[in-house]
Image (cartoon, rainbow, N blue to C red; front, side, top):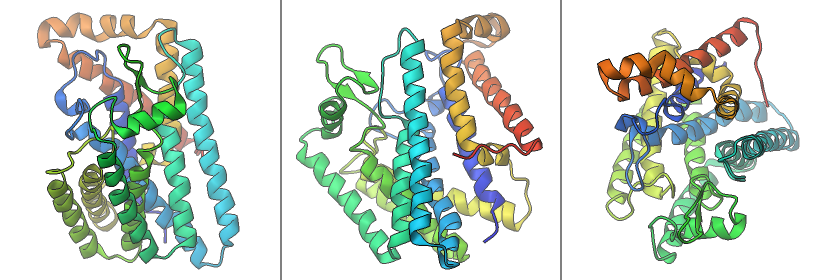
Length: 353
């Protein structure tokens, strides 16, 4: 199957959204749709990372499965996928090491966004190469129901005391995203235990990608609606929670991503609409990792606050209030990286890990 511009565009729009929500000028003044839910709930920002993991699964369906059907060696495909996953994981750890070394206020963290992407990519690649659809569906059900059981057995869904936080604290010690100064307990939104339901999100993307390959668009529509309905119903007993990546959150976010995938395919591949976001999509890891490095370098040099105050906040805040310049800074950051990936695309530079 030829490369779909719609998938590159969807991936690219997701990466651009990542940069937008990760880089406000002032974290104290962020419009609510651009902030994560404090704990339970699901804001538009909470959809961003699940969108990306779902698209990873779709990409595996469109990139690995055709090669398998054409006679490629399963062992060769597995080695290539595992090696790529290892490189992505190593990059994530390296970025965390750099932040801990260069930023005085930072501490070393082992989990992270790239690390979770690597683990989910490795897992879904193995499922794609070695299992049939029925096994994949059974795995999705087992991951969601099994993780639900673990959360219930843990006895609490509250911050710091839930089983995912306790597991990651026991495994990683203080090398996690957050440490409660009062108790010393840790929590990481990209921890290892909550990567299990994240794998379910990626496997749902794999199944959606298989439907997309076969042009089963009605199935995509019905599956998206079914995921939204099941997720909403499940949330009555188990609330949406990105930090814990609850099963209801998996279904809710996968439903929206399925419908977005269908909409992008219909508008771009079939009706010829411009593939906005494509340049971010074809250099997704480069854009995300590069922006992370910039987030480390600029504060280390002491530049963000002077830049923000002199270029935006100093004259915008008296006129529009503090939220507008904070958003403007994030938009400028995204625009800067769009120029970078645009220049890379013009020169045929594509960083593939």
